[in-house]
Amino acid sequence: MALTTRDKLRRVILLCCHFARNLAYHRAGLDTKGQVRRRGSDFWVTVNGNFLDQCVLEWSKLFGTTGSDRKGVHYWKNAVSDKTRFQTEMFQRIDRAKFDAMFKVMRRYRNKFLAHLDQESKMNFPILESAKESVWLYHEYVVKNEAQPGHLSAPPRDLPTNLEDYYRFCEGEAKKIYGA
Image 1 (cartoon, rainbow, N blue to C red):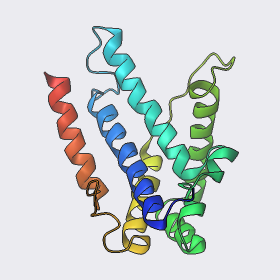
Image 2 (tube, rainbow, N blue to C red; image 1 turned 60 degrees about the vertical axis):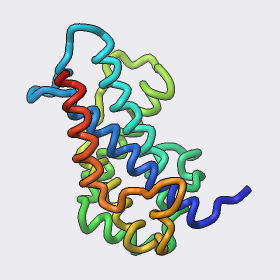
Image 3 (cartoon, rainbow, N blue to C red; image 1 turned 90 degrees about the vertical axis):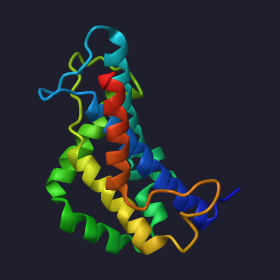
Image 4 (cartoon, one colour; image 1 turned 60 degrees about the horizontal axis):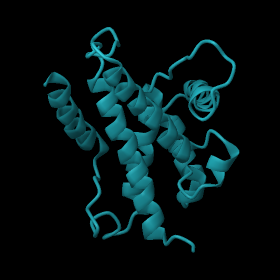
């Protein structure tokens, strides 16, 4: 069964929110040196790593690190109506070379360590700042240019129309838990 435009856009926004929430939880769990705050057990290291992994998976659904991702309904080229406009706006805000480099790191991490555990001995964790920028842009673009009234503020629940506010909310929630 094909998704309605409303359902497709709600799912895109949900994936953007999942990325933002997991990024907030991941970053809230790191100290100023980028180390997991609570190192007394493998539990917190694993939890924090899972948040990072989930960011990579959600980003891959939105920006297509594999051929199957690019066939998905959430992949930006399959979700936005004006692909040229979206791509132009994205690369006006995000340096193309920086995006391409980040894309390769995300794809490599996803393919070599997350989806498969290949024979490489060193894991290079992606730096998620460019990924964050691209997800924020995608979210903003859908909210402003694709979603119709009622698409995002309808049952089963209203979806955030400001991703930065949602990120800050999740970050505060995580800091309370990490600090407990």
